[in-house]
Each structure stands twice: as structure tokens, then as C-alpha cells.
Amino acid sequence: MRGHLGIRILQVVPTLLLVSIYVFCLQQLMPGDPALVLAGEERDPQVLAQIRAELWLDRPLVIQYFHWIGNVLTGDFGFSWRIRQPVAMLIGQKLPVTLQLGSMAFIIAISIGVPMGIISAVNKNGFLDYLANGIGLAGLSTPNFWLGIMLILLVSVQLGWLPPSGYVPLSEDWRQSLATTIMPAFVLGNAIAAVLMRHTRSAMLTALEQDYVRTARAKGLREWTVVIHHALRNALVPVVTLGALELGTLLSGAVLTEQVFSVPGFGKLIVDAVFNRDYPVVQGVVLVTATVYVSLNLIADVLYVLINPRLRGA
Image 1 (tube, one colour):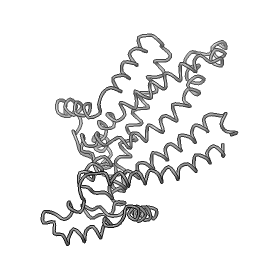
Image 2: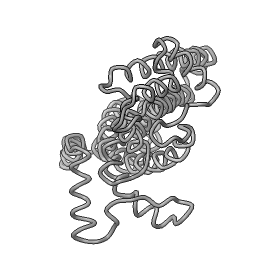
Image 3: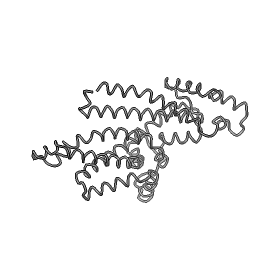
Image 4: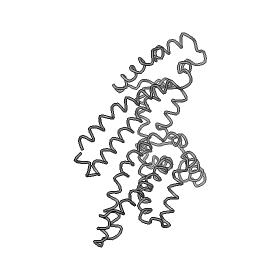
């Protein structure tokens, strides 16, 4: 177990290093000159030269990268070129919003996907199986932005049950906070629920055909006892690891959903930064998102080892 986890931990550092290089180099491919955007309409040559010198834009790319990554390692992501605020402060303000949204979406996805997968597997080739597969296919096929707009029209405009957009922090009013995030969380969790349903169904079908399940049934145990206490415990091994990875997907894939519902999270922050050529913000957000995703990947490996006894002695 220690050897397996040790190798995975050692792989985190070069992975994040490559991500940082990729993120930095990708910014150079974006069209436009940030100095021109910051200089305003006059674009005086002296002002442009001063801006490029202050932002290290007049240095070679290699020097720019080492200057940036050196500051990042000390926790300094630089300043936003547009609003002149520390990127670390902006991330600290927006990250809790996306974490709350992603966590709620993950809970919704698990609450829908895992039970549907179990029911589908137990009723293989039956009506409930076809119904669950149809719902899963619809969840995978429905674009998030379209589903979000339809929910706003139905739930907010027609029925008036929930606010159509905005965000209220949990610390201010938890009821209103849940009201403003339940719809975008459902939109985000919808597709993940379909993925979890398909994997749960596949894992349960494999588990239900194993010898230990036949032995449990031969002992006269109730069917749901066999399904929950024997088959599900083993079927959850791949589902748990997949769930950890999908949580990272939720956190990194909330861009369109946050735009549709005007949620001030990571998605809206990075979209505004891209349009304004605010490179430090884009780099900081992408790097933090990648770090969270890699960390969740590592957690998934740890959970896999803890759940699967065969790997504990490795």
C-alpha cells in the first residue's frame, strides 16, 4: 500500500509542473496584447513600454515563466491586470462559491445515480432498467446551458419557486443560499448522475454474478440484503474512485452553468479574465483548478486502496 501511494504522490509534482508550463505557454497563444488593453484609448508608446516593463512582458518567455512560477511557489499569484487586486484574494473569494456549487451537485449526482444504477441492475432487461437507461441517456445528451435556461423559464419565470440567478453566501442566509444554488447544482449534477448510474449498473451486474452472491442467496438471505450488504459493497469500489474524479470534473466544468445562472464562482472569474486578457487571473485559476483535480485523483487512489483489500499489502 505504501509503495503504491508513494509512487502516486511522487507523480503529483511533475504533473503540476507540466500543467504550469502548459498554462503559461497557452496564454501566449491568445490573440491581442494585454498592454494595449491596459493602456486605454490613447496608447502612448511610453505608457505601453512602462506597462510591458512592469508586467515583465518585455522579457523572454523563459524569464517570464520562472519569475511567475517562483512567485507562485511562495503563494503569490500576482495581481489582476484589470482590477489591480491580488489574484490569490480573488481566488479566495470565488473558490468557496464553486466548492459549494460542486459539492451540492455531487450530492445530487450520487443521490440520483447510485440508486438508479442499483435498481437498473436488479431489474435487468425489465421496465425499470429501460426507464433508468433512458433517463441516463437523456442526462448525458442534454447540454447544461440548455437545461439551465429551461429550468429558469419553468421554475423561476412560470412557477416562481426559485430565484432565476444570483448567489447568497451560506454565512449570510443559508436558506437563500440553497435557493440560489439548487438549480445550477442540479444542472451540473445531472450529467454526472447519468455517468454514475451507468457505472453503478455495470459494476452491480458483475457483482451479482459472483459466487459469494449465489452463496448468500443459498443461505436464504433476503434479496435486498444480498444486494446491499454483499453485492453493493464490492460494486462501489470503481464507483467511489470514479466519483472522486467526477467531483474534480464538476469543479472545473462549471463555467457555462455559472454564466447562465450568474453565479460569481471560478467559471465567471475565468471567463471575464479571458475576455480582458487578464493573464495572471487565468493562470492562477487554471493552476488552482488543476491542483484540486490532481489532489482529488490522488484521493481516489487512496480510497481505492482502502476499499480494495487486495491492494493493501502492495
